[in-house]
Length: 270
Image 1 (spheres, rainbow, N blue to C red):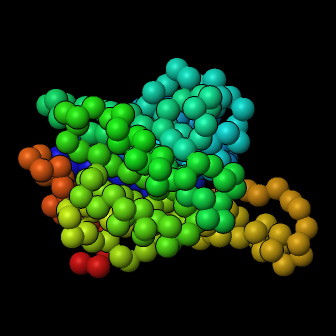
Image 2 (image 1 turned 180 degrees about the vertical axis):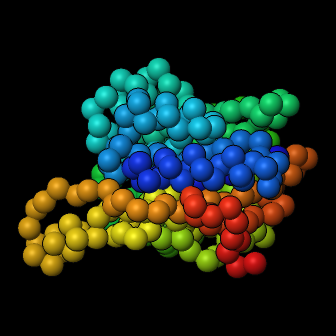
């Protein structure tokens, strides 16, 4: 099974990047399932039905989430009727939506997808992410051989710890949230693919996807102000995972970058 996971999609530039690059990626690779982190799709903060549905129309199969899950009020109702949109599993049971789902390839193979929110330096502090992962894995049906985990967290150490904790129990653990790609993709000793942060999909002439001048003003003058998604050429950061259909382990992990205006695909560390 080939799984493409796209890093934090930031506003309209991120949407553009997916629209222009995903068809090309499908020609280059035999991609079975596409997952993307969507917590920044609506003006940089949160999810709206319009934006989520647009991503689904572009060929995304499942959307994961993060600490901005509820920044847009309409997400509270939308997530109740859209199982392809996840929220972190370690929210309380009373929270709308689900933190995991199972999706199926065109030829009938199943992939479990789990969304977890880290606790270190990350509001709001939720249930223990490690215990939450344990809980979710008891709920995913036993006939699901492949399980992918998006850990949305600030701390690299917490993400790395989750990778080691789940090594051999899931197919891959990939981090999101910081929007800055890391160079540590690898396969852990028991067969789990791992990457601390895939990076964002959005305008990279920016401060993590947001307008540079407005970000500098807030940081330098310590004054409140509206943040604004940066506009300009967008870059897609993603990770391509080759998952073994017999063992469920990760056979290959490729970290990639693709410019919306450039037909070439650059593989990091290759």
